[in-house]
Length: 463
Image (cartoon, rainbow, N blue to C red):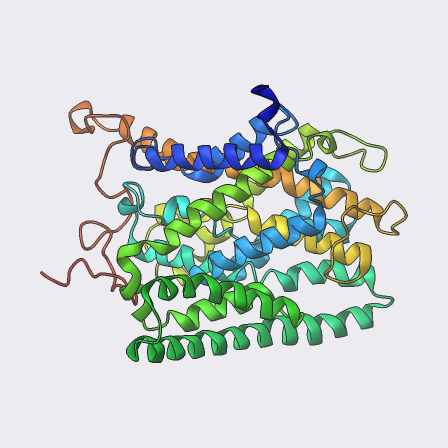
């Protein structure tokens, strides 16, 4: 009789597993971030893999009716909130280099290679948090580098749309002239330029309205805090409804809303962005771990050249050449990068994650329906079926590799730095050093080599 009361349905088990992971992570978050130098994305992804259909089979989103269209909206919201909270020669170089490697290793068409490389071009704002979030390692990195990486990761999900549609439009349009016309008018002017301008207008306006409401005591403290999250969702909704670049709308709204630092100062004690990050990001990465298309990493009739060996080779080439060479070459033109070690660091920390997943679904939607509305399943009779069936598994494999490599890089750098010191200079425990990373300029002694940004405490203000 007792056992008949148990209802171990998939939603109930999802609540249980996801909340249990978040509770455990929260309980040991300081230890995990500062002593183990790990962040939640690789851990959450591993939880998704272990409880997903590949291992234990407890979490199986496909069996719940969660398909491409819902994945698209979930990634849209997560990335939109992230870019709300947070010079693209580097992005263009990475797009072309990644496209070249994809074309050569996987024997794709040029257009398919450019579509895949566009998905992988942006630096992911979620994974970048492992460097940017407050932690022992983060405090060893100059603040100017963290600001630069944060700005880059916040805006380049949106500015990847021109790269994506440069590969898509020649495929889905009847003529090259029509493709060029639509790329300029729709992608560049409407989606990007209008989207960013609209976002700035929304952000500035929301800042003024909230100030007035707070000054006149029209808003209570709980609503004041949630306003941040609701404005991010509103920005995404406006951008997606108008067919504009919703990420640039969200980024512009975030920049406009936070331009003077007023809201950040008001809510600093609440750590609101960190709270949202923990829940939204971890949930998404658990979900990703559960939907990884493992079977598509092996050769199929439609994608015979997509093999594990080729994908590992592609991952290695992308990690080595997508950003590092161009950042090293551009070092003299980027004032915030002052040494070649700093350039190497910034070149390496360009992770690929949730934004790449969204762009991959966006690409599949365009190839399937010539719109941004994704179908639940790729149609079997699509004229672009090879491209549709290639984009998703390749992007998922590279994202999985990036999660693990970039997610574990902080721990690797810390451990190597620990053992490279003389024994009497090491911290009492492994990777426990607090001093600035070697080869980086810290004029203030702790990374404070530049003025603070709006809403941020200046550590030198009291000196």
